[in-house]
Structures are given as C-alpha cells and as structure tokens.
Image (spheres, rainbow over the protein chains, first blue to last red):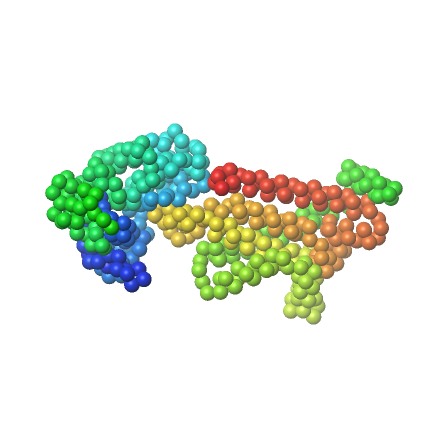
Length: 242
Length: 235
C-alpha cells in the first residue's frame, strides 16, 4: 500500500518566534513536490517535521497507507529516507556507506550487495565503490547521499537542497538522478530548493512558502506560468526583497 | 664504568640465552598488564561511550573526575588498594593481597580513567552529521551508538594503547599490593627496582631493554593507528 503524508495545521516556534503557522497539505500523489520560498520562510522546519526529525508544537504530520494511519515508530522511519544538504559520510568505503541502511535492517549479504550496487549505478558511483567515502568530492558525496537513501527503497524520499553548493555538472547529475528515480521507482519525492530554475525543471507540484505559511501551491508549470499569489510572482521573478 | 659495561654484557647474554627467570618475569608482566587492560577496557569503553553520547545531570562532574584520575599517582592507588585488601580492610577476607589479582586490580584502577576519558574524547569528536545520517537511514538509538563508536575507533584504539603504556611502565602500585615475591608477583618494573637496590644490574638492564622495546612497539602501534585515522578521514 502506497505511503502518503497528510500535514494538518502544523505550528512551530523557536524561542517564541513562530516559524510555521497552520501549514496544511497532502502529499498523496507519486511524483516530485518542490518547496520553494525565501530564506526564513519555514521550508526546512516544515521539511524536518514531515520527515519525522522534529515534532510540531501544534498540529500533526500523519502518514497513511491507504486509509489507515501508520504509527510513528522505527518501522515508519524505515519506510522513508532523507538526504540533507550536508551528508554525514561514514569513514569507510563508498560501498559500505550505501550498504549501511540495508545492514541495520538485517538484510542478507546477497540482497545488500544487489541493492547497494544498483543504487551506486543509479548515481554513477559504481566505479568508486571500493574507495574511502571521505575521499569523495562534495558533488560525489551528495550523490552518495542519494544512493544511500535510495538503496533502502523508500516510499517517500526527502531531499533538502540536494544541489546546494555544487557545480553545474554535479547539479545536472543529481537532477538527472532525481528524474530517473521518479520514472523508475514511482515514489513520492519531497524536496527543498533555492534554485527557481531547478524547481521549474523538476517539480510536478510546487509549494511556495512565505513567513511560515504555504501561500501558493499547484502543478509546477501552472505556478511558474500563472502564480495565484502576488508574493509567488515576485519571488520567482527575482523581485522579492527579503 | 666497567661495572656498567659488564652489566650490559651480562644482560645481553640473559636475553640471548632466553633466561628462564627473565622469561617468567616477562610473561607475568604481560599477564597482569593484559588482564588489567582487558578489564579496564570492558569497563572504561561503555562509560566513555555513555558520557560521550548521553546528556544527564552530573555528566560534567564525571568528565572532570575522569580527567583528573588520568594522572592518579600510582603509589596512592597502591596504598588504597592495600588498605582495602589488607586483612583488616573491607575485602581482607578474600586474601588477595600480595597476589597477581591484587596487582591486576591496582592496574585496572590506573588504566580505567585513561580508557574512559580518552574514549569519551574520541566519541565527542565524531561529526554530529554521522549521528544524524544514521538516524535518517533508519537506525535505532542503539545502532546509532554503535555507528558513532565505530567512527571513533582509531581514537578508542589509541586510548587502549595509551592505557597499556601506563600499566606496563607502572611500578609504585604493584610493588605495594604485589609485594614483589619472586616467582609469584615479581614483574619487570618491580624487578628492575629491586635489582637496582641490590646493586645487581644485569637482570635490571635486561628487563629495562625489554621494557624499552615494548614501550617503543606500543608507541609505533599508536603512531600507525593515528596515521591510519588521519589518512582515512583526511583530518
């Protein structure tokens, strides 16, 4: 049963400063959801709550398998995976980094090898599987992060600025990988980006966040062609001052 | 000068001929220090890990205590273990005083803070992203801890080797609680002290050379482990 995420009236404050205000959204379609918005709009906090890294002050982020709610426990955490802007690279080979998530799930060696090699193929790092992951470039490390997340075959993949601080070539490779995952794996991908052009290239659905609220959302092409909210228009045309 | 040269000549003969008394002393030293190291690692590593990974009231106090105990004077440890194990002490009924067990206890007390404090120090140096990465990949809290320990492995190995260096070179505590009984509690360091007192240098010099070689090997191992850690992490 496909996993879906329903976020209802989420509120979150840090040091009494509200960061999220009554955010509500349903991630119930396969495809790529892209969160855009200016710095400090609450994207990362929203993302962390959706991906179970944090709890909201009020409201809920519920996962469903069909119509049934899924309990928030380790089993649910193992059905989703995340790639953060800075990935923690384990001080071992590239292969063992990718195999990590499979090993902790108790998979047998044959299955671990198969899935890890597939994931490395997916991101184009199969030829580097035996080198120490600490020796990878930042672009390769980011691809390793995607491979590690994909090896565990998540039902929802979270990507927080996966191409932040990467050169254009590495960015293209990551974007191609994301497209490939979408086409081959048919999963839900929720990602944050600051790159409006990248959002245009990748998004099936765009959510525009502003001052802790989801102020605009819709099919990627529509939002970029005819934004419903004036703030979205100013942001995507680079006229928003913040 | 002649007596020193003669002492060295005889010492080399003892080593070359694998003198049985010399071997017995070396083996007892390795047995006592090895046992102390295993016990102190078994106790110190979990303590270092817990204070490295968990936050709880009194944690800072424990860290300060362990750091202070790293420099415990061996004779003070020897004195306390002696008082505890002596006939009138709380554990006197176990009749452990002047036995290898008493020496192991004293050396464990000396090595434990080194293993615990240096393990803690290695664990807190592990990049917080590692913990986050293992959580995001679906690790349980126990699996996260194991991952962090694994990342700190070179530092932990260095901690164990530093503790080994401490116990192998130790003399004050084991002299007090072991009594330096020939063939029973006489180890390398205590023999060197005794033989020097007696003015019979050949055995003392032979053991001194062996102790220096062991110390050199321990430091080479420490260097190689640290070098491997630096090469792999690039830090």
